[in-house]
Length: 319
Image 1 (tube, rainbow, N blue to C red):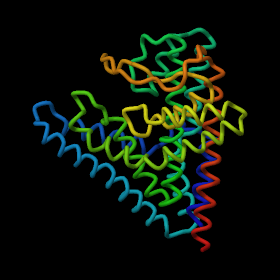
Image 2 (image 1 turned 90 degrees about the vertical axis):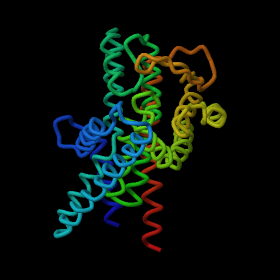
Image 3 (image 1 turned 180 degrees about the vertical axis):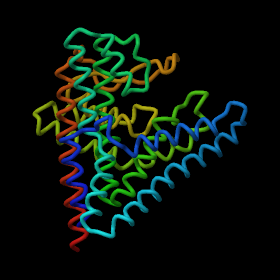
């Protein structure tokens, strides 16, 4: 029961506060640890085999360490029920990012509305991995829609899934897995060997949440009176059109629901990466209202996910 209450309170806190940059945040510490380990272990003079082994060690230190530290914190906090709930709620809150994702997207929307394309490019560059300095206004909009759609799973539904199962310990371990993938899980020359294990484990960890998100977004499209029929059709057809086995699930539903064509070739670190298109070409120009609708779908699916996960947890506990 305590986990149900902590996750619910954390969800509300995320929607109210977002992620103030000045606040202490364990994910920032995890990121610094990964950065330090990467500098220490991922050296070009090392063999591919050695870099792979050190990549596994980096994963073990980061994910195992995150779980152990949070477990220790929760054990210490258990001396008092109120302290336990406060600490646990805060740690759960730091695993969620729905509101902050929406805030960053809204900043980009405002810059585009003000016709400040350079600023919008810089802002979207903070939340996507691709090169953004040459993107058109529509390219910026589509990149933002794609990252909001993808992070509906990675940033909200997946953390909720693991938090409801295992509280702040499992939730923080998932965030460590996800942060590793976002920092070193690239397929370029620098990270291919070192980040291979982290990328594969992230794919595994997100396998079920991505498919749950797919269903939740389809339900959201119906509740919001978008084109649910096309959301299902495109979601079914294009859900695996991505190098990651999970990323296209949410993007495909959003593309279908909003009659957009997402994906396609993009530049990463100056290199062109050819990716398949997701969605049908309706000759619709992606605009701010499409992005606003994607944010609404993010919120709707997040609430649905919370309610469903919490109800299942309660049923299991009561039984």
